[in-house]
Image (cartoon, rainbow, N blue to C red; front, top):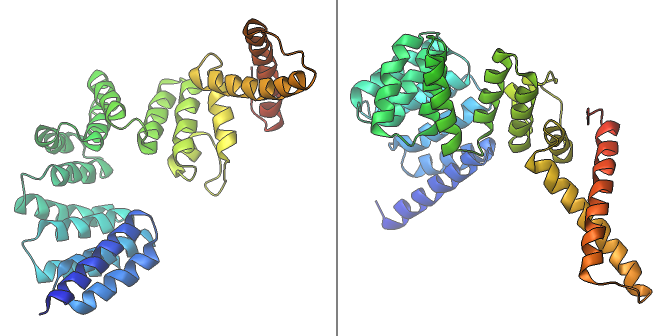
Length: 303
């Protein structure tokens, strides 16, 4: 074994991981297989291939995780990979056993405890999920996804107050996570708060325009696409007094002001800053009308 081989292996493996995180799954597989060719007994490239193939909905994905388990039976992450592959492929019943094995191997891993809770939630075993999620939060109280999963488990066992607390904590920890905003939208939907639900769904779509649960939440087809401008307008007009509409109006007012100032400067009649301030407020009102017109042309109720 040469040092250059190890260096090249790690480089290829890191590249595969980067591509995997950026959803370039086919390329991730290529790099992982190149790494495997250098050290075929290292389970990590097999795990990467398993995740990438699962994301591509390739039913062969679990077999790659099993190969990793064969190499290192006591490696908890290989068992997690097998469970995750089944979860991604919506084969939930098959995901439970490998996650149970991972918990036995590494009970002090918060991610694995949380994963076990997630598996049980998907199987509607909410009461059974709570002890695992509680343990996950004891090990890592800053894990937003464990809080979100605990919120689901508590909601379905009747603890509405505890559920709200954990969902809000999750959003505070990860305010830009589209999945969490989508979960909040469904929570509002169950309460009959349709306006708030739509606001949460559109915020989720702003962060991830392809997010299926948020599309379902607003009644859109799963294959439909939204431009960021449309999502921004929709979410803004759901709360006309909100910060987002304020930013939109102010931005448009400043653009109109810039155009006006160029004209006035050309005539050598540009007044003092006080008049400019008056112009900003006037154009701010005009901006709202323009935005309402744009919203209505896109079929958005602008109030």
